[in-house]
Image (tube, rainbow, N blue to C red):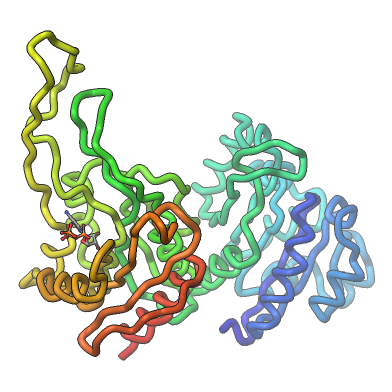
Length: 398
Ligand code: CTP
């Protein structure tokens, strides 16, 4: 909840401003007080009337408005919030912030404020990738400005790539994090995700069909509840979520090392599809077809990261959660796996091709714990993640 938290919300001039209307509604649903500032360009995309109706208060627009100055001066306005949020943060606004310009009310407030600032950039892909924007991003990050997004996707201008403003939910989660809110605030949680690639030679590897979608959704949901998330990911298809610390690895051995480096944590969720074996002596030169017949590969067993962490005598996370991807006797196999690996919970799922779960958007899981097996209905991976995150929050609170 954000009861009585004061957000000064600067709405820049971009098509994404329509999403900011939804953000205002969500913030107010959570009890936040929103004071909106609409730039001149912003008012080309959303009307002051809609903003003010949703925020339930007046909209500030012009630096030289004498009535506004008489009621609340711009310096006071800049200091009256717990957090300043800029959404959408256009290339122009970011440039002004980075350069320290203060030619209108929004940029003046950003210069005069003494409260933390969170920005949700939104712009065309090329503008986001332009060297000037890159410089501005680096400068703003060095100045302590927090970012949420942008996301990758198709954009209103018809192009594809990074530049889409983060969704209202993601901005809300970033606001909660910035304000130290949420049931998992102060908790450090490790999530492993995606497949691993085990090299055969410099160009070939052994992999599996994991897309990383479920692990990514779990990391996003945990961050949304305020957790500090360390996201150790193999080469996944889906991009990592916003607002988490991303550690990219390729092999099981690298994942194991990255997990060790992330400890201690309050909870560890092992959603990665780790290869059980690696090629014992991967060649550092490309294997060539030879007249001597087919190549013979010897395998070595990879460390079982989940089992190792779950069985730590010292520094074991309070809650260790594994996954069991099964094709037969799901509950029996997963129950045995939970006992064998010594984890607290196992989320078991049937990954037979007919279920369409592996690489798909939905999941049907059974939560296996000390209390027994609890089947969850088939639902979207994001919903599975939210349900799991809520259970983790409840378990860590007790
Ligand atoms: N896991 C891991 N490290 C490994 C292998 C698996 O951390 N080297 C974790 C996975 O992230 C998952 C759980 O263990 O949470 C289950 O993985 P799975 O491969 O299904 O279990 P196995 O023990 O390999 O059993 P089997 O392959 O016989 O089903």
